[in-house]
Length: 335
Figure 1 (tube, rainbow, N blue to C red):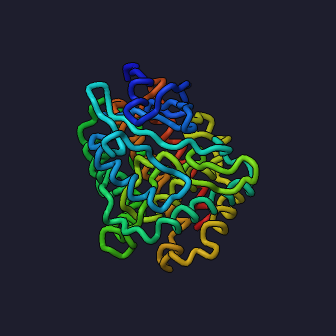
Figure 2 (cartoon, rainbow, N blue to C red; figure 1 turned 90 degrees about the horizontal axis):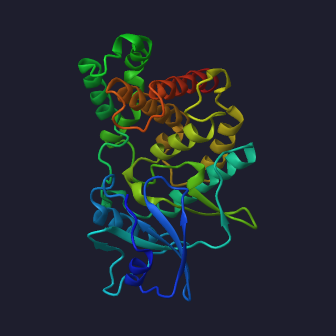
Figure 3 (cartoon, one colour; figure 1 turned 90 degrees about the vertical axis):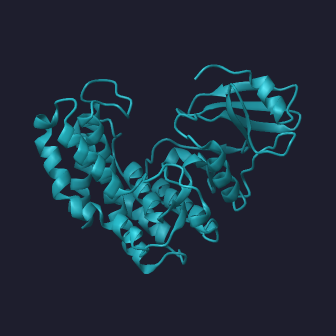
């Protein structure tokens, strides 16, 4: 995205005589910390090529923030929660002081803290009717839709790669019925419609730098209606692997049972909002979301790498095999 005048945009939200610095941790939105006489804030330009209806997205966020006291949005002079002009779509969050986030789970204790954080997030939002929210990315975790895209990719074989990945294609097809279980239950109304975050990796959680206690989840752009199992599954997928999803050496890709048990105990403990069916599918959610990512990576590989950024020709295939390895270890350890 092109540069923009940070001072001019900040002034639209009532901030003048500011200092600012870019925060480069995110990869989707452009983010700046601004410091003024009013305190510290985060100014963001939303990537509207990904979030194509940013006004509805902001409505989602505003609803959720009514339940999250640690986060708030600044308003423009005319009372809006965003400012838009020919240079982009902007918003301003408060900066959460004395907070820290982490990139990787390194101990069962940290895994437990992550499980507790997600439980707190879901419980805090349990009084909000998920059906009131806009579906920011339609069919994001819908396995039926993802298999439809996969089948089309196999049939068209645009990049001429299908013959070289028959084992991976066979794995997807042989797991089709099981992989669709949670999507099927949700579609039938057998799982409650909740408010879900949909990107529940550790780096999206803020903890108190002094006490280590959970403060809040951030990066709320993908908050939308769904089942909590989308979130528990993504937490398990991203938090219980001993390696990144780009790791080529599968001998070091393992599923940590210790991390999983710590997450499970922390998330399910005293979690009265859950139905019996939701709680019983906690482990299955991890397998399901890991599978949907493997399916998406393989679909993109068959299509010629048109969605995910890749650094080399087989990058998406490496990601696919990495996720399959996790699934195979889950099957040995959990089921």
